[in-house]
Amino acid sequence: MRIWRRLVDRPLLCVTALAIVLRLPTFTTRLFDADEAAIGVQGLVVRSGGTLYRDIFDRKPPLPPLAYAASFTLTDSTDIRPMRVLVTVLLVLGGVLVAHDARQRWRSNSHALWAGTLFVAGAMALFPADAGAANYAHFALLPGTAALLWSRRARWFWALAAGIALGLALLTRQSWLLALPAALYGAWHSGRWRHAALLVAGAAMTVSTVALYAPFGAYWEWNFTNSPGFVFAAAGVGTSLLRALGSVAGFVGFHVTAAACLWLLLRRRSPLRAANRDDRDVWLWLLSGLAAVAAGFRFFGHYWLQVLPPLVVLATPVAAEFAGRARRLALAGVALPAVVAFALLFVPGSFHQRPDPSALASYVRSHTTDEQRVFVWGSYPEVLLAADRLPAWALVHSDFVTGRSGGREDPAVTLELATPGALQLMLADLRAHPPALVLDTSTAADLGYQHYPLALFPDVEAFVRAGYELVTAIDGVTVWRQVTDI
Figure 1 (spheres, rainbow, N blue to C red):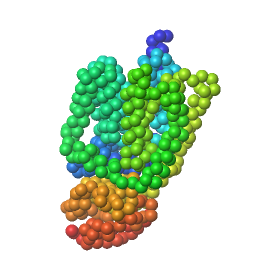
Figure 2 (figure 1 turned 120 degrees about the vertical axis):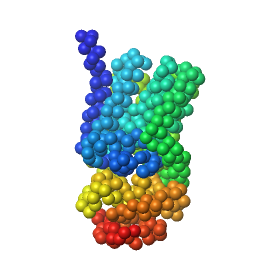
Figure 3 (figure 1 turned 180 degrees about the vertical axis):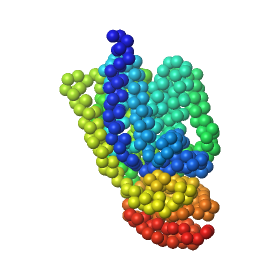
Figure 4 (figure 1 turned 90 degrees about the vertical axis):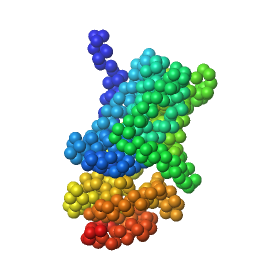
């Protein structure tokens, strides 16, 4: 009986089952957000023999595109649902990790259940585009959580493991760099400078492995050197404030139990008091997560996943103390948002509608071969992924040329924010390898490029008009077909 109890760990089994059930709807939907398509386009290039940060560029880390490329190779398709399965596995592991850590710390199955449930339900209690996708934030959740938990442990090898985990988090979403001070403080508090040094060494060693599969200098430039200007680009105060309020309200509403626990904890004691010194690093992790949410004042829902691990660690002991009516309300505060989020996953376009690329992708497939490339003017990677065609130039979208990002769609402002050299890179690629088709999304009403006609870039427009003829428009997207050698 004792052996059976060890094999069948009820809290961990419950957490595992919850994660699988809540993510089941994601296995039936092809796309939840444009990030998945952008990662997929990079995966297409890598699958064809290309190299990240040399043949295809984005301001994002390398591990998710490599995972997509491996999936495309193994399945011989561009179906990203296997990546949803992988994200589900990562969510299960994250839930088990926080549940196990809570039980070790509090010696209680109740704490383990609360920790795992708050973590798994919290990761899924978002709007569909944020909860159901398999993007950078979802891949980073497990290693980021491991870095938080392991940096607090007393043995030296846990500090090294925490550094490796933090390095993996950085290779999946670079905003976890903001958590480095919190990780260092946790390691220092556990083992002073030796542990802090081991954590830094582990992170540096892990990040340096990029050199094995990509130019390290280009990786650093596109992930860190170029990012500040993009992240801190000017935004309207009123618009940013409304986004901030809406984002915070949405997160608190979906995570009302954890938020209430945090509020009760703050009322009981200050996180800066000496009596609470063992949790100071967790408060620092929480602050770093909030900083990541606010970066660039975009407030995308999946940004909140970086807040989740420290929030769960802080909320768990408070939630486990509830009894009677308070306990029932806390359970309802977890269950109701989870059920709502689960139901919304069956309506993936709710709250974040993207046009269906099927008609345009079908035209592209029927008028090009596997070897021919397609130039998309705009930010519409979904069509390339759906058509299984490579991009005609080395960037996943035109935002690098126009400076457009995160709701900033005024050329008078954004053109100054364009990535240096992006336009020249675009033109060089187009002239060296002219695409079979040009898809101009600036003529579509719902793809965000209405303010960026080709005429804003005379050299690009001249290239298109010199060698292409306008043949049709599909869902508002103007299609140009190559007619002469350029």
